[in-house]
Length: 259
Image (cartoon, rainbow, N blue to C red; front, side, top):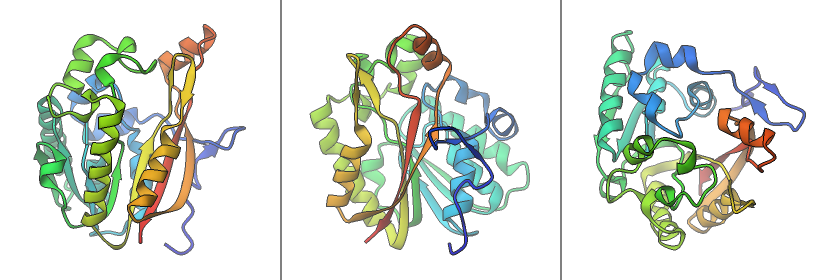
């Protein structure tokens, strides 16, 4: 990793947040159309940049809560990807995306597992890149969840009874600590875990999810190596901002090392 600089070819705004381009072209090239229903899909260009920065050709990259399967873009640059997805709709979306990428001639290995990641982990890997869910997703308590999407979108997002997004914050934190512990066991010595996480607004106040997550992971034997911010505004945050509603326009990329 000597000499590498994260996102050096991307612009930063006046707050120092990295600005990634729209991933529409990458999505059209590699993703199945089922990704469009996901209310929290990750920017594919961001994931590709993380792959190139953190990993080497032939490495195994794990995503335990893989949603639309964005990490599968790693196959196009020779990274082997293991995704775990609980929800049926997005599992099927990922299978179609995997087939589409393989048809481009990508030779790396892609595996998509269907079920609760807590039942599959630990899985040996070199790196973890993932974005955890919010607690209380179905309750709509977070100002940037259910009320901004159709009921069908959110129901597909958290259809399973085992989805951690269904849990209240106290029980959610207990289960996420279990997940982070299993990911620590999964990683090889010197491996990295990148957590992509965004604070949210509840009752007009910003809830600092990132700081709480860092404390949780540090307790389990992870060390923060880097902490980046990216500009992550969306259509609905822009609309709410114009209305005078407080929004979160930044997303945290926290890179941990296993110690």
